Image (cartoon, rainbow, N blue to C red):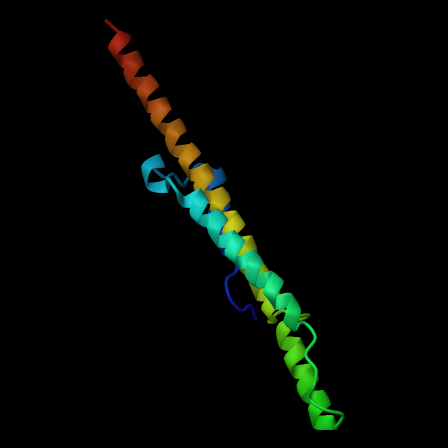
Length: 126
């Protein structure tokens, strides 16, 4: 079971963008790359902070304390549902989303240029 965001969803959208099925007007997409970069910076800072909780101890020598240590350490790192894994899913998704936006804008610009060329060709005919 995946927790958080599934980067595969964005990969499917990227495939659509790469095939030319997704386009985005540059004015609408303007600034989205900076928003993605800012969000990636924040996620990276959180990931670095999460490094501090990879090993959680101090629950004492009793079996219950050891069980708590294992449980909380597993929540921080090392499993599919741990904090570091979920943060990496978000980082991957944002990176792919940024690619989608760039490709969708490029698709729009190319389609606009192509249509303009077609119209210019119509004007040149007698």
